[in-house]
Image 1 (cartoon, rainbow, N blue to C red):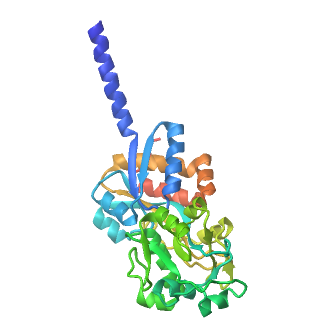
Image 2: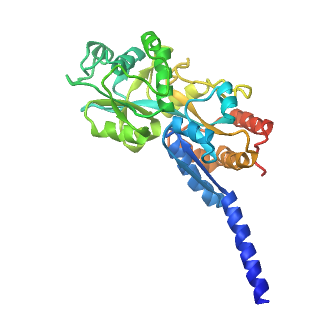
Image 3: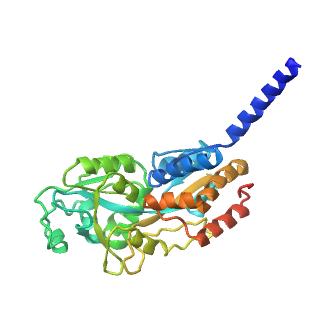
Length: 341
């Protein structure tokens, strides 16, 4: 009898450990969505006891890691084309929408007070504008007392989807930038820049560096209590970095299943449409439906749970619209990675 109980205990422990292992998934990559993914993981564990871990490293790392089948999914802010996905044997869908803001540290200049257009931002990061009291910046900000100090642009040091979305905005908003730099995850900046790895470190560097400016995901602006610029829209009016203005821009997405949701939302038209809004994407193997279903189970929960939606909104992200979620679920069915329950 004792022997039978021991055998049953061992068998039960084996089954439990297998179930626990099956319920664990890990991802890495883009730091843009990291705050919301981590918060979702905590809430998901409370609801289901299933564990999700996510670490940063940048969009480039997210794509390369999952291409090498390291982990269960990757995060990237720069969507892959269907040709790239086919080549790497990957699938892709959006996880959440967020915004990139121009955070700054200028003594006496409060949140939203600094106004910048595409020409000014391009000038700062190309090195054409090097002083805060530059004539053009003063023209845009006649009521501000800008200091006669060197501008310190802070940029990402690694391959970054945030950089891609920021430079996508610049390439659409400024012809000279489009001609000389374009949009990419890594840039040979014309300005003398201060590099930092990941959104969190860029935000901390701005906070610690007087007269600095850099591009970060909005959640990090909130976390570090930084000031962020009001930007000129494609329509020619001014949009403060607020949820209402992010929402206006997010409505302009052109997702499609055939293109694996590839889209760039930067510099979209519309009154008060904030010009640097971006979707961030999940990439996962196309040749491992079992793992895919574990990943989509987590994201289905995130897309439908009211707690998850509230957590995203509280952090400054935009939960995906219901129509987009339905399209994603159709995509999962098409590629046989829909959750089992």
